[in-house]
Image (cartoon, rainbow, N blue to C red; front, side, top):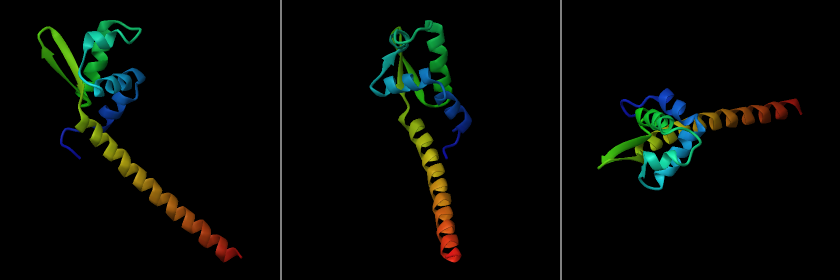
Length: 111
């Protein structure tokens, strides 16, 4: 895993539907915080807080161009989260495969 990657922070950030939507919108290209705020039934300040949570988790970056703050998805942060989920999937598939083999062996022994 990458140094500084906080699994709890990343998945905590992604646990909120608004933050997942912000990440989705920012994947399509840089979008200003003010434009993002127009998509949600909450205050500009609340959207800023959501963006800050995503930024601390390493899922988005912000940059300033003039007076605008642009939000962009950090694809590497998402890739790290995906790799972790892939590891969990591999672990559980292995466990299911072993259970399936055990059940098959038990059925053969019983007959």
